Length: 364
Image (cartoon, rainbow, N blue to C red; front, side):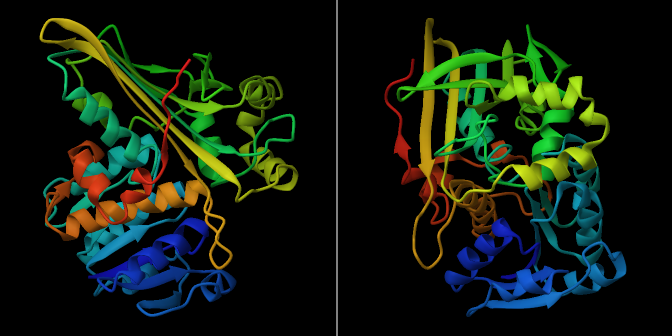
């Protein structure tokens, strides 16, 4: 299968190596940055320098490939998906942007090719887990999805390091969040809904952020009483982000905020990803709760060290492409994450990254 992989950042490089290593994929890695492209080489990978915002040039680069895998910033998702449709490529991406996903769903209507956005961790894997657990109940009450990509060794006041896209981070902190309350679909404010919990003896906080639910609000509408998604951070992070975004009004000057974060908050490869889903409801007349809780750690390999967010995000989109190639997903139109069967995902050669994680047994 010939893949046009757009974006040679940390995640794109990981996706390229994972897909090419199987021998089942020929990957053309496309980026405008020659230094980023130079970091990736090997059997099954060719690189091509293209300005990914130059639509005619990108369209020409996409032609002849079976699928486009988009690991570019979220604001390029709609344009890239439009070009993929024109080039006759299937389309997969990692976007957490709600508006982009809705636009891609419209693009997919009547298309001969498949469109599957939101294939990362959250949205992505988290929705696959929540939907799988929800199927085990006769009557659904509450579905709560919590995910955090956190530094293993927090040292600054934000108790945070940059583990993924700054653009994506600020986007999820600034946009309204979908939720279902008392059976009604509504929008809630980002950074609100603060809660505290402990997992494995560590204290955390969680609060509303945008995009993590994917399409679950539509899928579970009319079937669930409460559905929400929150990002997990160490205690104190939310208060400082509210100070920056609201009190200092940097949500209206996001370019400055991104510049400050890039200059002042170090990146790290030493991170941990938390996945925490609880579903409650009735089964055979009994009120029950099911929990899925995992920690995924960074890989400290000397040759190709990988952060936990690289592992989980790349595993998500590679598993989606692989299951599609195997015919386990629809071959045209819009594909929701929850159409992926969790057992299929975890049995997949890429999805096994989540199986090899540590299950968390004690939750307080």
